[in-house]
Every structure is written in structure tokens, then in C-alpha cells.
Image (tube, rainbow, N blue to C red; front, side):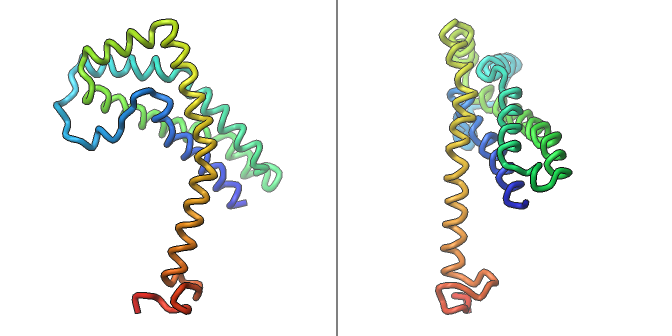
Length: 183
């Protein structure tokens, strides 16, 4: 059952981590760079509009995605009580964290883009073509998250296998004949 819960959690993390793909031009790395200045009321308001326009129906799509992941995991079949709890709570808990994340993204936008740049984004995303692009971006982010899940699992498995091959991970098996390479 832990594996199935882990699968659901991993799906939620993948969805959360790929929201960068859901909001175009979301350069979170730029938040680590020197910041030009504090966001103004104008840039905050425009950034909020950009985020709202570029993530239409995001919460509903994420809730639908999480419901599908939980249903496909077979968790309810294995433990009805835990499965029912996850069906009821996993999505809403994810949404709480998504809202926090999106608030942080809004601050990045308001800090990194000028009012003129943000207004240009609003103008584009309010156009017919911009709305079509924005509507597809959230789904693309979710679908890309689905592609990321097996990669993350393979990475973690490979990382831990190689770590334990080179070091004592407490199971007596490693590349140093069962002894820690630090000894």
C-alpha cells in the first residue's frame, strides 16, 4: 500500500513541479538572480492578471488529474478506508500548496517583469490566440508531469542504488564489501 500512496504523492509532486510549464515564461531561476527591485502595486496587479489568464481551470484540471491517479492506483481496492481518505483529501491538500506556489510565482513575475512587459503579456493572453494557448498550457503541464513521474522514480532508484553501492546504507550491502567507505 505504501507504494500506491507513494505513487499518488509522486503524481502530486510532479503536477506541482510542472506548473512552471502551465504558466508561460515562468522563469523561476530568475528569482535566484539579482532582483531589480521590489514589485509595485501596478506590477503585482498585472502579474496577478497574467497568472489568472495563463492558468484557466487549473485547479479543476489538477483535481481531475489527481482523482484519476488515485482511481488508477487501485488504492481503494487495497485499503478502502485509506483509498477513500486519499480520494477526499489528496487533491484539496495539493490545491492548498498550489495556491501558495502560484502566489510566489506572482511575486516573481511582478519582480522580474516591468509593467509594460506584463501589460504586453495580458494583451496577448486576452487575445483569441492567447486564450487558446493559455487553455492548452495547463493540460500540457499536467501531461508533462505524467511523463516526469517515471523519470523521477527511475532517478531516485538509480541514485539510491549507486549511493548504497558506494556507501553503507545500513543493509550491509555496498561496493566496499559491506563496510562503509568512510571507515
